[in-house]
Image (cartoon, rainbow, N blue to C red):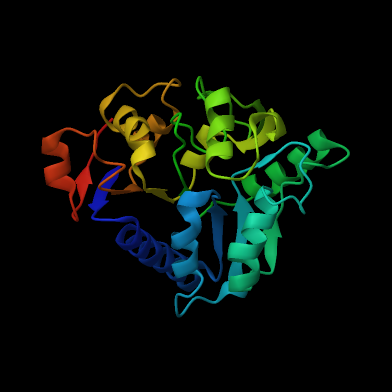
Length: 260
């Protein structure tokens, strides 16, 4: 895994979006199309804003999936990840083929199987992910399942994760946050050819430290990214603030490889 640190969220987002755009353009040139996985959440706002304005991307040739979705939440709900991605990525960019996780589907298991089949049908070129305050990737809260080979799984959300959603303003209080979600599995995320992790803000600092400096463990789900040779973790001064001084110094606005 490679580590890059930037002065602020704006410069982080621009650099990550440039890398993402290059990955998409390269896939289209090489294979005639690109397959992407998109994350949601406040950390992705600036990144997606820049990415959707990038030049030279033939968006109708891009096929998309999202990382996760709440169980039971309609697509019209302000916190729905379907709504987030439609408003901030799919409609802005002009993506015509996006596989939606319908968290309010009548037969949830059948829907998960169908989207899983589509996802597993061909390699993913680039995955955009974040890291939660509890260290999760997608909705793989600790202790995450590092063994399942299922592309998507139904998970229970822990309280720290649910409180983060309230803190970011998606829900008025904890009682409104769903207790279950559909999540792409950790192993499935690692199958992407390239992973771009966008992780700004001081509130993510402890999770980032555990990811980079602790053991690779289900208790620090994002630590599994260190097993991917082509993953890039984009941090700002806030999210990198608890890292060792030597690691910060070597990585700031540069590239440092963090081994497993």
